[in-house]
Image (cartoon, helix red, strand yellow):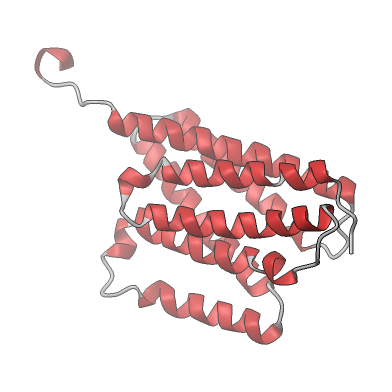
Length: 207
């Protein structure tokens, strides 16, 4: 088991908080968004909590570590459903629930989280595309670019997190990239939320 520095373990909470804050900023878009934020927060805090416990010479609790991708898969699936009008127009939620259940079952049978990780990447991609489209509709080019940067960061993090050899140096790089990506996401979400709160010019104001 890797001997994690406390600073590394503590920093792992930063991108988790940024992600949850960014998602919560989108809560005006659908009532399910806070549920998605809660699932993502739970997944990130489970992984970061496991690392902090290990850094403090506590017991190894692998179930905390392995909770990350199943909870992220659930959270981003709920978020994609909440953000997509097309998905919500389908007859029932089984369109997403059935494959998601199959993925989680496969992860349980294989005793490996890679099926959930693959699904998470797919769900993140859908969320990013929806948010880029929303930002472009609002005319916010910077937010669209930042959401794209966030997606690129997720593509980079997946293979890094999946490596069996997780050196301290690699984890610092991984967490730094994650923090930057999630900060970009949170700032873009703030811009999108601010645009939604701005009143639409009418009458003389529109002139």
